[in-house]
Image (cartoon, rainbow, N blue to C red; front, side):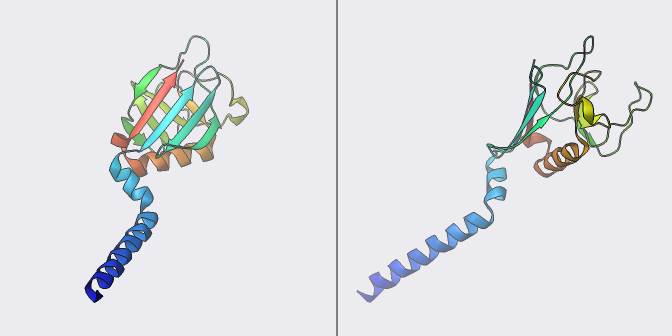
Length: 153
């Protein structure tokens, strides 16, 4: 009898400890499980939804490519990250907190925040500087292998 009671108490302690550890490390566990980071860009709506471990964390206004400068649709992984970058193609325009995803196209901060919510770029996806920094940090934390960028035209 004493052995059975002790075994139950020990089992309960193990379950409780596991639950506590699971709560403390749930984000790390989900990252390890592969849920990751997903960035959905709706070109028609000029919005970006950011899903962290399967849950919607952010919905932000963006500016994508204006007439004659399409933003490429498709599904991508980040190719490289640049904290401070200046466009070599467009007069050294600042592209800070840039997440490059396809042939020089990037998601990056803009100084033209009044234009967010409508097409205004040469094809890149522009974000408010605070949002670009937050996205950049998330991509750094999750890594390029666990980040997916989906652009719907």
